[in-house]
Figure 1 (cartoon, rainbow, N blue to C red):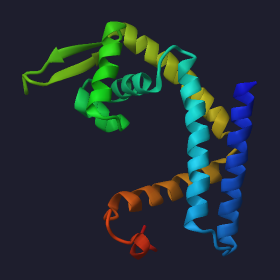
Figure 2 (cartoon, rainbow, N blue to C red):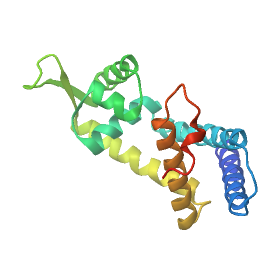
Figure 3 (tube, rainbow, N blue to C red):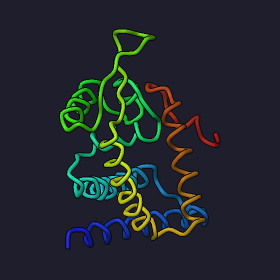
Amino acid sequence: MARWSIYLDIKNLFVEIYHLLVCMTEETQVSAAKLWLIFAKAHRALSAHVEESVARHGLCLSDFMALEALLHKGPLTVGEIGARVLLASGSMTAAVDRLEKLGLVRRELTEKDRRARVIHLTPRGKRLVEKIFEAHARDLEDLMGVLNSAERGELYTLLKKVGLAAAAAPKHLDVSSMKGRK
Protein backbone atom coordinates (compact mmCIF):
# COMPACT_ATOMS: atom_id res chain seq x y z
CA MET A 1 0.00 0.00 0.00
CA ALA A 2 2.85 2.42 0.81
CA ARG A 3 4.35 1.93 -2.65
CA TRP A 4 1.06 2.89 -4.31
CA SER A 5 0.62 5.94 -2.11
CA ILE A 6 4.14 7.09 -3.00
CA TYR A 7 3.37 6.47 -6.68
CA LEU A 8 0.12 8.45 -6.43
CA ASP A 9 1.86 11.30 -4.60
CA ILE A 10 4.56 11.44 -7.26
CA LYS A 11 2.03 11.16 -10.08
CA ASN A 12 0.10 14.08 -8.60
CA LEU A 13 3.31 16.11 -8.33
CA PHE A 14 4.15 15.41 -11.96
CA VAL A 15 0.65 16.50 -12.89
CA GLU A 16 1.24 19.73 -10.93
CA ILE A 17 4.61 20.23 -12.64
CA TYR A 18 3.06 19.56 -16.04
CA HIS A 19 0.26 22.01 -15.22
CA LEU A 20 2.87 24.62 -14.29
CA LEU A 21 4.71 24.03 -17.56
CA VAL A 22 1.46 24.40 -19.52
CA CYS A 23 0.60 27.54 -17.57
CA MET A 24 4.05 28.98 -18.28
CA THR A 25 3.57 28.46 -22.02
CA GLU A 26 0.29 30.36 -21.74
CA GLU A 27 2.25 33.25 -20.21
CA THR A 28 0.65 32.79 -16.79
CA GLN A 29 2.99 34.04 -14.11
CA VAL A 30 4.18 31.40 -11.66
CA SER A 31 6.25 32.74 -8.81
CA ALA A 32 9.69 31.40 -8.08
CA ALA A 33 8.44 30.48 -4.61
CA LYS A 34 5.67 28.32 -6.10
CA LEU A 35 8.15 26.63 -8.44
CA TRP A 36 10.49 25.96 -5.52
CA LEU A 37 7.64 24.46 -3.48
CA ILE A 38 6.62 22.13 -6.32
CA PHE A 39 10.24 21.16 -6.93
CA ALA A 40 10.82 20.47 -3.22
CA LYS A 41 7.67 18.33 -2.98
CA ALA A 42 8.65 16.40 -6.10
CA HIS A 43 12.16 15.88 -4.76
CA ARG A 44 10.86 14.64 -1.41
CA ALA A 45 8.44 12.19 -3.05
CA LEU A 46 11.03 10.95 -5.55
CA SER A 47 13.66 10.58 -2.83
CA ALA A 48 11.31 8.47 -0.71
CA HIS A 49 10.66 6.22 -3.70
CA VAL A 50 14.37 5.90 -4.53
CA GLU A 51 15.31 5.09 -0.93
CA GLU A 52 12.57 2.45 -0.73
CA SER A 53 13.65 0.97 -4.08
CA VAL A 54 17.22 0.55 -2.86
CA ALA A 55 16.27 -0.53 0.68
CA ARG A 56 14.39 -3.54 -0.73
CA HIS A 57 17.83 -4.90 -1.61
CA GLY A 58 19.30 -4.36 1.85
CA LEU A 59 21.36 -1.23 1.18
CA CYS A 60 21.03 2.36 2.26
CA LEU A 61 21.06 5.03 -0.43
CA SER A 62 24.62 6.26 0.20
CA ASP A 63 26.02 2.73 -0.07
CA PHE A 64 24.10 2.12 -3.29
CA MET A 65 25.25 5.44 -4.77
CA ALA A 66 28.89 4.56 -4.02
CA LEU A 67 28.51 1.12 -5.62
CA GLU A 68 26.72 2.61 -8.63
CA ALA A 69 29.50 5.19 -9.14
CA LEU A 70 32.10 2.42 -9.10
CA LEU A 71 30.02 0.32 -11.49
CA HIS A 72 29.69 3.10 -14.07
CA LYS A 73 32.96 5.00 -13.58
CA GLY A 74 35.37 2.25 -12.55
CA PRO A 75 37.80 2.40 -9.62
CA LEU A 76 37.78 5.73 -7.77
CA THR A 77 39.20 7.24 -4.61
CA VAL A 78 36.88 7.93 -1.69
CA GLY A 79 37.03 11.65 -2.52
CA GLU A 80 36.13 11.04 -6.17
CA ILE A 81 33.17 8.87 -5.19
CA GLY A 82 32.01 11.51 -2.70
CA ALA A 83 32.21 14.25 -5.33
CA ARG A 84 30.16 12.17 -7.79
CA VAL A 85 27.42 11.27 -5.32
CA LEU A 86 27.48 14.58 -3.41
CA LEU A 87 28.41 13.14 -0.02
CA ALA A 88 30.83 14.63 2.50
CA SER A 89 34.18 12.91 2.96
CA GLY A 90 33.32 11.47 6.37
CA SER A 91 30.01 10.05 5.15
CA MET A 92 31.70 8.57 2.11
CA THR A 93 34.44 6.97 4.20
CA ALA A 94 31.81 5.42 6.46
CA ALA A 95 29.93 4.07 3.41
CA VAL A 96 33.11 2.55 1.95
CA ASP A 97 33.93 1.02 5.36
CA ARG A 98 30.48 -0.64 5.44
CA LEU A 99 30.83 -1.89 1.87
CA GLU A 100 34.32 -3.24 2.56
CA LYS A 101 33.07 -5.16 5.62
CA LEU A 102 30.37 -6.70 3.41
CA GLY A 103 33.00 -7.76 0.89
CA LEU A 104 31.55 -5.58 -1.86
CA VAL A 105 34.58 -3.30 -2.37
CA ARG A 106 38.30 -3.41 -1.70
CA ARG A 107 40.83 -0.63 -1.15
CA GLU A 108 44.13 -0.66 -3.04
CA LEU A 109 47.15 1.59 -2.86
CA THR A 110 47.93 3.51 -6.02
CA GLU A 111 51.32 4.14 -7.60
CA LYS A 112 50.47 7.79 -8.32
CA ASP A 113 49.80 8.79 -4.71
CA ARG A 114 50.69 6.38 -1.94
CA ARG A 115 48.51 8.32 0.50
CA ALA A 116 45.37 7.70 -1.55
CA ARG A 117 43.60 4.39 -1.85
CA VAL A 118 41.55 3.48 -4.86
CA ILE A 119 38.25 1.69 -4.27
CA HIS A 120 37.41 -1.26 -6.53
CA LEU A 121 34.26 -3.35 -6.76
CA THR A 122 34.80 -6.97 -5.85
CA PRO A 123 33.20 -9.57 -8.15
CA ARG A 124 30.50 -10.03 -5.51
CA GLY A 125 29.97 -6.26 -5.29
CA LYS A 126 29.72 -5.96 -9.07
CA ARG A 127 27.11 -8.73 -9.28
CA LEU A 128 25.08 -7.17 -6.49
CA VAL A 129 25.12 -3.60 -7.79
CA GLU A 130 24.28 -4.74 -11.34
CA LYS A 131 21.26 -6.62 -9.98
CA ILE A 132 20.13 -3.73 -7.79
CA PHE A 133 20.74 -1.11 -10.48
CA GLU A 134 18.66 -3.06 -12.99
CA ALA A 135 15.71 -3.30 -10.58
CA HIS A 136 16.18 0.33 -9.51
CA ALA A 137 16.20 1.51 -13.14
CA ARG A 138 12.94 -0.41 -13.78
CA ASP A 139 11.39 1.22 -10.71
CA LEU A 140 12.39 4.66 -11.99
CA GLU A 141 11.04 3.90 -15.47
CA ASP A 142 7.71 2.89 -13.89
CA LEU A 143 7.70 6.08 -11.86
CA MET A 144 8.62 8.34 -14.76
CA GLY A 145 6.06 6.61 -16.97
CA VAL A 146 3.69 9.42 -16.06
CA LEU A 147 5.70 11.57 -18.51
CA ASN A 148 5.86 10.97 -22.25
CA SER A 149 9.12 11.31 -24.13
CA ALA A 150 8.61 14.97 -25.01
CA GLU A 151 7.70 15.85 -21.41
CA ARG A 152 10.79 14.04 -20.12
CA GLY A 153 12.96 15.96 -22.55
CA GLU A 154 11.41 19.26 -21.61
CA LEU A 155 11.65 18.60 -17.88
CA TYR A 156 15.30 17.53 -18.29
CA THR A 157 16.14 20.70 -20.22
CA LEU A 158 14.39 23.00 -17.75
CA LEU A 159 15.85 21.38 -14.64
CA LYS A 160 19.34 21.40 -16.18
CA LYS A 161 18.95 25.09 -17.05
CA VAL A 162 17.85 26.02 -13.53
CA GLY A 163 20.54 23.85 -11.94
CA LEU A 164 23.36 25.31 -14.05
CA ALA A 165 22.15 28.86 -13.40
CA ALA A 166 21.97 28.21 -9.65
CA ALA A 167 25.44 26.63 -9.64
CA ALA A 168 26.91 29.58 -11.55
CA ALA A 169 25.14 32.28 -9.54
CA PRO A 170 27.24 34.12 -6.98
CA LYS A 171 25.92 33.22 -3.55
CA HIS A 172 25.71 36.83 -2.39
CA LEU A 173 24.16 38.43 -5.47
CA ASP A 174 20.64 38.70 -6.85
CA VAL A 175 20.19 36.01 -9.51
CA SER A 176 17.53 38.01 -11.39
CA SER A 177 20.34 39.16 -13.69
CA MET A 178 20.60 35.52 -14.84
CA LYS A 179 17.25 35.72 -16.70
CA GLY A 180 17.35 34.58 -20.29
CA ARG A 181 20.63 32.68 -20.01
CA LYS A 182 20.82 29.26 -21.61
